[in-house]
Length: 215
Image 1 (cartoon, helix red, strand yellow):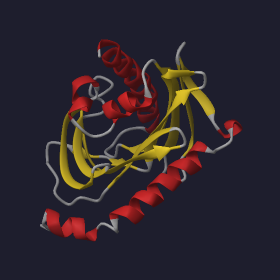
Image 2 (cartoon, helix red, strand yellow; image 1 turned 90 degrees about the vertical axis):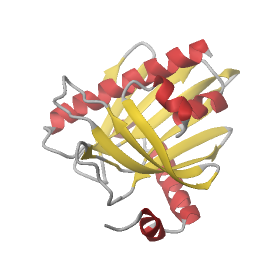
Image 3 (cartoon, helix red, strand yellow; image 1 turned 120 degrees about the horizontal axis):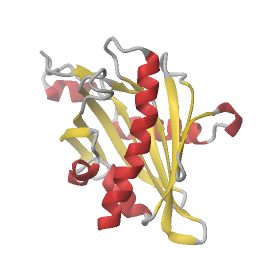
Image 4 (cartoon, helix red, strand yellow; image 1 turned 60 degrees about the horizontal axis):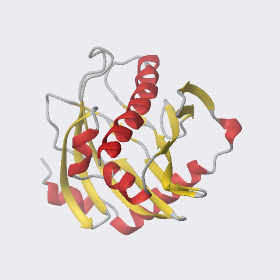
């Protein structure tokens, strides 16, 4: 088995890798509205999707207003102890490697979904948080990490990220827009994946609002 140190050496220069990831997310953020199809909508969150150009699934877009300032919102989303306190889907999170304050490799696990039709998953992601316009972007992509745990199916996140910017004229509220394209792998019908993804994103906003309402 390749050691973790060796695997990290196989990662491209972290700064260049981070810049490429950021640029991919900015590209998603500029996709025209008519390319998206609404798949789920509540009074305060909308979820769209379009076919992914990365794999045989969908790129999901989520958007809603969060009643808190940008830094607080992103501090709860980015890798760190805050995330496990509120995200009901995430069951563990470990930082495997730090490159600099805003750049790391993390391993995390998720709970089973749809009455365990989708079993728990494990992901190893490169994560990067950077300024974007007057707000922040926290983005990530999975790495091919050879160390696997047999009790989890290893999923793969193609470029994903969350843009958070202050709401115009209401600086203590933030517009949070996410782009998620996850290959859950394993033997799951794509329709089940798509159903789970839309619901998971709605729940993500609900969980986040709850915890921020308490702080």
